[in-house]
Image (cartoon, rainbow, N blue to C red; front, side, top):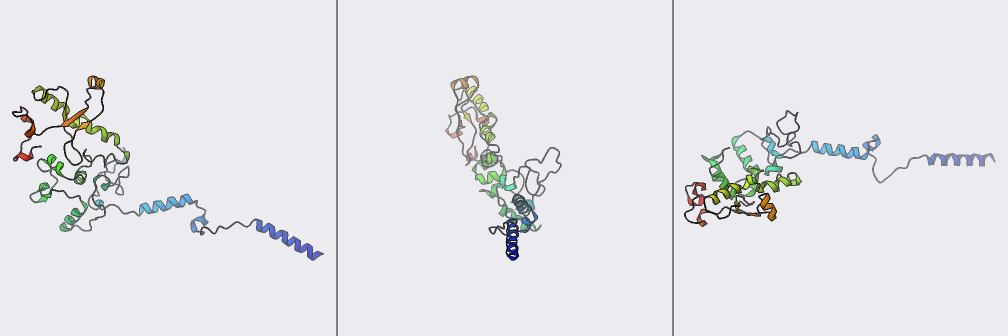
Length: 273
């Protein structure tokens, strides 16, 4: 009788102990982080921070480490160079200028530096036009506006990411300055329609007083027509125009044009813009 009671008591104690044994999951291995009690979100954040800290900088920094950031880090920030290869909004060199970020300078040898520059920089279609005395300099060549119109958009972006021909791929990228990129090319300060309209009408070269011609170029560098929707009331009260055509070349305009003062001089006829 006593043996049966003792056996029953042992069974009750054993069932109570089993009820308090924690459940072990075999779907995920137990790691040091989980044993330390850190939540999974903290582990992921730590892993991301570690990967970001070990990320390689763009090779541009090996030569241009002292370049000032495009976006400042703050009104009280005194540092006038990039932090970890990025500006205040996280943009790198190639995000705006393009080029090859994988190339890095490894020595101060002049020949090695020239080789690295050719690999990292976007090369022009007309390299001879951009050289002075056989070498590249910081100076712009003569008639660089018409020269850039013949260059590729990749080179235009490399030289000036704010150029209106490539601004849709740079400043307007990721919806940063999308509104400005659409409005600025149609601004009077960009196409100069007021200048051309006043000169043509006052000199009797075009019969309409409202501006009809403006200066605008497409991504490929060719002259383009600007179009916008406007009502009759907007054209009358606000001075809006529905379209602006490119300025015609002198070869196809009327003979005896009195506005040759606006023509850019050049040594050869085909250089006239």
